[in-house]
Structure formats: C-alpha cells, structure tokens
Image 1 (tube, rainbow, N blue to C red):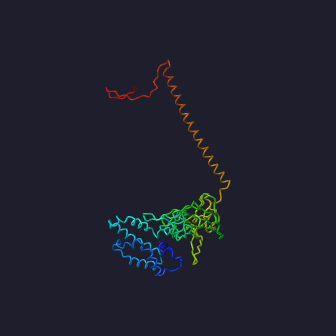
Image 2: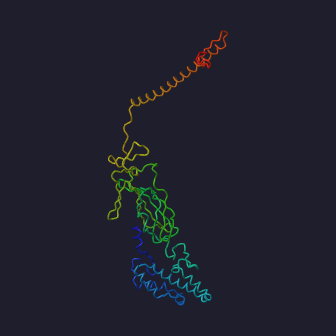
Image 3: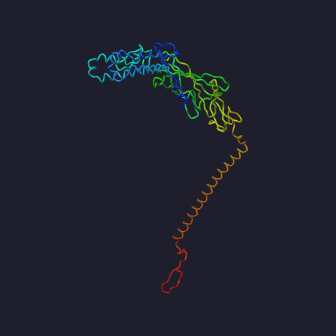
Length: 394
C-alpha cells in the first residue's frame, strides 16, 4: 500500500502540441494560454447565454492555477469538460432555442471530443473519438509506437513462492496502455556460483483493465518437484516489458522469484538485490527445505544444514547383515510350519472322534436284532410306589 500510495503522487506527463520538451516547466503564463485556448471554444463564445451560472473567466483562472501548480496539463481536460457540460445543460434547458438550432447542437456535440481527437481520429456525435490505427487513448493523443515504461508491477518486483504463488501473472501500471498491448518475459536463473543463465522467453497478449492498468500472464515457468533437478540454482529472475504495438517494447522491469522459507533478501543503498541461504535450512536442487526434511523420493536422505546446505545427507542407519536376515527368515519359516502342524493335529482329533461315534452306533444296532433273550442295558431308574410309599427298583 505504501508503494502504491507513493506512485499515486507522481504526476502524469501529457505532452501538448506547444510543449515539446517534457523537462520544461510550465510557467503560469503558459498555463493560462493552454487553458484559454482549450476551455474557451467557439461555441461557448457564441452562446454565453447557455452557460447559465457557469463563469468561464473563473474556470480559466482555476485551470491556470491547477496546471501551473501541479505541472500537469491533464487539468485542462477537466475544466473543458465542466464548460462543455454547462453548455449541454443550457441546450436542454432552452428547448425553443435548441429546436431552431439543431445544426449548431450537432456541431457542439462534435466538439465534445477531448482536444478534438488531436487530429488523429474522428469525433463521433456522442463526443467520443475513434482513433486511427496508429494512435489510441480517449483523445487519440498517444502513439502506439511509443515504448511504455512499467511504473509499478505487482509485488514491487518480488514474488515469493513460499505460500504457493505460481508467479505467472503480474499486474502492471503505466502512463498509457493500449487495449491490445503485448507482454514479454525473459526467464533467467541465478546460480550459487554468481552466474546468471538465460532459460528462455515468452510473449503473450496482455489483459487490459483501463488506460493505466493491465495484467501480464505467462506460461508455467516453474518446474515441478517431480521433474529433473536444477542443481546450483539460488533463485530466478524475470525480465518483463510491455508494448502497445507488439514491436516496440519499453524498458525491462526485473521480478525476483524466490522462496523465503530458506532465502534472506537484502537490498543495498544502490538498489542491488542479493539473496543468502538462511541458517538451519537447505537449498537443494533449487528448492528450499527445513532442517530434518526428507527427500520425498528416498526417505533415507534428509536436510542437515550442519553437514551441507546444498546437498542431501544420508540419514538412515546401515542395513542389517546377512546373519540377522537369515534369523528373521528362519523365524518366519518356523511360524508357518507350526501353523501347518497345528492344523493337522486338530484335523486328526476330529477325525478320530467321528470314527468312534460311528462304531458305538453299530454295536447297539447288532444287540437289538439278536435272537437270544433280550437284556436291557439301560441304567436302572428310581420308581415311586404310591401304595406303600417306598422306593424300589424297576
């Protein structure tokens, strides 16, 4: 917010026909000339009665003060619009006069275009300009071939990927932006050795928001963790520029792409930016890790800054020897054999029990069908004699 607020205080430079040197200060006399020539139109001079309570002399005085104090010719359009609005209200208020002066009203509406489109377009009846192909803006006063300067870029030139930002889209602000503006980015990587290597470039159509603001979105530039590594990379740099005609690009604005999880950012008095690796963190293959973080491809490797901040450290103990491995295999084999033997024992017991039951049934059957006297083999049971109240055997 502080950065944007400071940018808002910067005046925009509007180069008029009589001001060819942008570094020239606008004196009070020059400001009065500009305001008088632009605010006081022929229609206003002819139809003072349509102004109502609008004081044209006071409007010129206020315009002169604003332009001279702010050193900004943009104030002229504001005061001219106020005067034109007063005339337009006058035409609506005096219906009889308007009825007999339709051509004059039509001519007046044609003059509502700011600065009469600067001769670079056609003024429509609704008071808007249709610019020639080489110009743009509400007054057709800006050439598309002018190289636009990025006054501000999202993040102030820094993009932190710690919390998941893809660092693909960047809002930009400039003095004048055409609806069909183009964006260009050159990707670079800063190595731990201090060298800067170019990765590639990308051009794309910009997303227009208004005359001063737009957005540049580029293709995916950050590799995935599953892809091949970037050994020795400290951080990335994006050189971004914009163009209103797709050919003439303005100065480059640098965006630093980094991860604050393991990188400290330092800016010296000359605006030089440097990054250093934080203590208790690692920067391995271009990615940041905290102490004791493990490699997702091999958990035996971990981040150990005391050993190395730029390489994985072996974190697992040595694997078991062959003797221990054989003992483990023997234990497993013993358990399997024990289970099999137990199943066999249970099956044998069940089989013997079923076989004995079958033999007993066979003996009883043979006794029941023999030709000799029948001998009861049922156990004796107690009987109750009601007559003598004695127990007896039956």
